[in-house]
Image 1 (cartoon, rainbow, N blue to C red):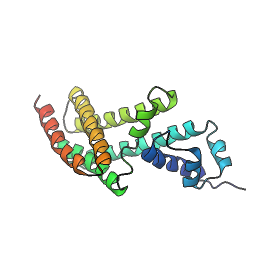
Image 2: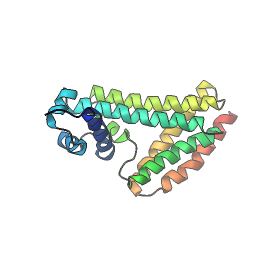
Image 3: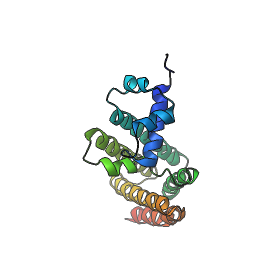
Image 4: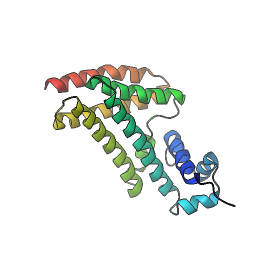
Amino acid sequence: MSEKPDSKEKTVLAAASLLRRHGYNGTALSDILATAGSPRGSLYFHFPNGKEEIAVAALKLAADSVRKAIAGAAKTSKSADEFLIRIVRGMAADLERSDFKEGCPIAPTALEVSGTSEALTGAVSAAFQGWEQEIAAGLQWFRFDAGRAKLLATAALSQLEGALLLARTYQSMEPLQRAEEPIRVLVRAFAKA
């Protein structure tokens, strides 16, 4: 039986969606295969180290997608607060489209694996660091110095991640909508300092 040329990509995409919904421990290899429509043989051909290797690839894919969206928000915004609000609204739109089933693509796994798997801990750490760096780069585009941009990036990402968690938990967009004003306040405070 010949493999489809995109079975590896389908497996990674399926894993990314499942990890986002259920986290690492709640995602079984059989679920990944069923969602991807991939034969079991292709799994070990493409991912000889199994579920952990698939999860690392899925986390990298998800992280890069968000990083690109952050970069795009910077390029299409006219101010620092508009830039950060676009990120919030983009994440909010994703959450709402999934009927509150898919929040942050990294957080569910990050909460489960921190310190238990070097490979997964490295992937989630790299994801969050990449997002912070991309946000800081966007803020520097709006004339924030590097130090202030880094501090504001951490504060904004923390605000966003918390609001996503609350929105998913409450099954309501309100926490994300309410997060916009504190982000504007942070931008003004960091711009003045």
